[in-house]
Image (cartoon, rainbow, N blue to C red; front, side, top):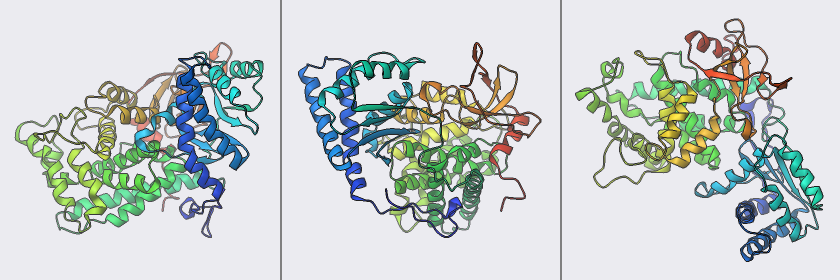
Length: 498
């Protein structure tokens, strides 16, 4: 593995720079990783339909063995593991084209369903063992004892060159051990609120026709990408805090964070994730042209007010087109123009011949709806995050790109980080982290709220007692008191906040 380059103060997240020097081994894995993912997916699907002697099965197994043999020759071993929603081979993250990410997500999900964290292919691996392994792996519907059953089946089948590692809850594999939780919290807070301040400066500067600070936005989104890839929980938790002023500014930052989260799960390159973040950050810049009387009007907009509000998409394009280097804001132009255009081509603005919706626009639409629906209005309480995700699921294929919606829902979980929930013990709690095991997506890690604003220890809702689970979620709800109290979990203490 390449060395991690650090500046002098490496104990702080903001001073960490990930090394870019790749070894020959890493280059081989990055080249062959997508092929291995593809052939594992194809073989797994084929063995579920045909027996091992079928010609189609034999063909795809030969293709799979070709990649495995090449990697074994180079590496001496092939270790396929999952970390969160990512696939790593010999500790090198596999990146695939966003349009071909389906097989990777499928493999990650199927491994998690069986409590399998890693699959090790050992030297001397015979082709026959690969087919028998895949046949056993996908033989039954996973249950509570899936891993134990699977290991027994492999032993009975005489499979000696393929070994499994059971899933163990842990921090993300990419997290640097020198980074403390306080550092993640501090850097998350600094990046989030500095970006919020930047959006405020940009929107207030539109009237004076001041230059939009694109480069500063790029630096801040790159910082947030680094944080998301280490521990996304605090940043996502900050997007859930809805009791602050300047909601228009924070809405832009929230959409940016959530859009980058989707792009990260779609395996975008780091620089492309930051570009998505900048585009989403400026998606509502056109609202500076809409009078405040309309922006702050209680109730549903109608008539001329609604028609003027819909024009904020065109106003956004007009404002962004002032930037001299359009290359820097090409994605932002499309996000500003198209984020209210539905997947089925309804919404606004309408184009006579229909739209060629950009992926950045489809990503921004999902993030925009989620944040808007979970934000309280003057005239109504917000929709709870779980119900908002259900809405996104139900309107997939209509308002939302089905694949983008699916990735977002899988990423956020049934109860997203920051959701206030009631447990069957009568306790109120806040979701602070998702459970990485897919079959426990409805059982996140929570922090009970005792006295207002006093978070207690984190509890894993998969913990069992006599007769079943110790705690379970009864419902998600919105309550201003709980919303204020949960800020203690994600915000820096005032005396520490620089």
